[in-house]
Length: 222
Image (cartoon, rainbow, N blue to C red; front, side):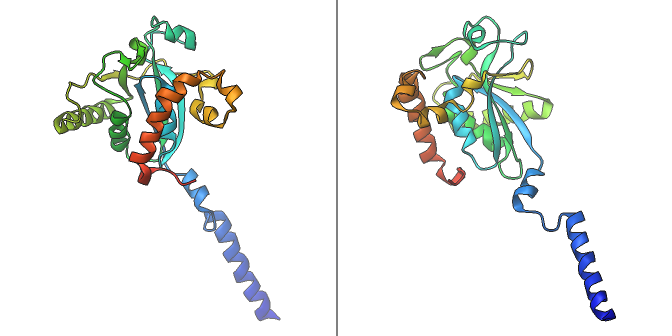
């Protein structure tokens, strides 16, 4: 009987140790505790690049917003007027152990044309400028090095005009802008008529399709 209680006591200690040290925690719980970083970039309409970053392995969240202007708060209509100084941006939250900031920047420079000044295709104005917003000297230096790397590789025939600006006055965009292309893909034909369907079909959708093909190995499963 004493031996049985002794074995039970040892088992109890093992269980307590596992609970208090997190020995039995799931991979999901462990992943949630991993360090995250953020990167804020603008490359034209945020609808065009938000969904692509969201699909990458290591990316936790992508939020559409506005940054770089002289004041807050601002609205979509005010930013679209081109008078606030803001750019349409996405804020990417990611696990650097799974995807590096350098690789996110490299991908960013393939998701839009960084040689177009204050425009992307049909969208014109400073709110559509190609821009990387840095939070510190290290972030600025990294962006500079990636631009030099891409310029040296001669991926584009024209010079890169992407601006590097200190991050300021970031504002989350209105809720209806968040995950806009996902909402479009799931919408009925009637709903799409109210969602700028022409822009999504002829501008956003081809970019998403090209991205999925080019970066298939780096995309999340499912």
